[in-house]
Image (tube, rainbow, N blue to C red):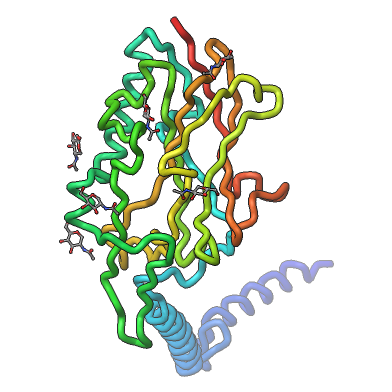
Length: 288
Ligand SMILES: *[C@@H]1O[C@H](CO)[C@@H](O)[C@H](O)[C@H]1NC(C)=O
Ligand SMILES: *[C@@H]1O[C@H](CO)[C@@H](O)[C@H](O)[C@H]1NC(C)=O
Ligand SMILES: *[C@@H]1O[C@H](CO)[C@@H](O)[C@H](O)[C@H]1NC(C)=O
Ligand SMILES: *[C@@H]1O[C@H](CO)[C@@H](O)[C@H](O)[C@H]1NC(C)=O
Ligand SMILES: *[C@@H]1O[C@H](CO)[C@@H](O)[C@H](O)[C@H]1NC(C)=O
Ligand SMILES: *[C@@H]1O[C@H](CO)[C@@H](O)[C@H](O)[C@H]1NC(C)=O
């Protein structure tokens, strides 16, 4: 009991000695050489780790291809999108109020500008229709840059904005453009059958949708625009479009519309992916 102080002093001097032992010249129980060796070991160890990391990274970057994605989600059927597109997939306007559809017309004009025939003739090829435009690389020899096929704006006829510069919006016969999202290497049809778009109203609106007209005829995405080789390989690629014109849609009512792709290689959207190969939007045309 009386030895507590004694023991304390002994303990603290042991501590001090452990920290720095003047007799053996040991710091924290190790000599300078021992410490040096440990530091050296860790230095070499971490250098090796860093080197290995860098090497792995380098090899991975070597195997990446600028022209092709190494990994691509195996999305069987791509999604579709409409133009004009606002914040929501909703085309609502009043025929008699120019300002209410002016933006849609502007949007379409801008979007279709690179589709001008004159521009297409300058940049793209006049390809034989109804067959794939295959431009494979032969082995290691890259066949780049690759050519693309013309999609003339005039193919959209009454929805081209040329003969009817308001795309029918001023007469309650609006045009909607539909595109299929790009997927590198996708072959959307076989036996020379191009995929085509059909639009319909959701059940409760089926009597409101009225007659539709598709451009190009039958609403096809011609096979000659496929396969797509990627933005870098096919610099002037022009995405094919299908225009739908609503000739006699009911006025002053919401119409829920769904357009979908029909193809003999792509399966239409399943329950699992309800956006595959289809797009839904709301149309409402008010007469005042
Ligand atoms: C396409 O044609 C429209 C008029 O038809 C014109 O306003 C537009 O500038 C043209 N765009 C290009 C890229 O030539
Ligand atoms: C596109 O239009 C140009 C000029 O009118 C024409 O020479 C060309 O054949 C057209 N291309 C296609 C694929 O229709
Ligand atoms: C892309 O278009 C430009 C003209 O705008 C043309 O000079 C060039 O050859 C085209 N490139 C390819 C690969 O088609
Ligand atoms: C374009 O519209 C006019 C009437 O506005 C119609 O007579 C013509 O058949 C339409 N064109 C096509 C290719 O459907
Ligand atoms: C449209 O489809 C019909 C029936 O499937 C076919 O007879 C016609 O040739 C097609 N038209 C075009 C321009 O592909
Ligand atoms: C347009 O639709 C209305 C019903 O909404 C119908 O009574 C009329 O016959 C249709 N017109 C044409 C040309 O189909």
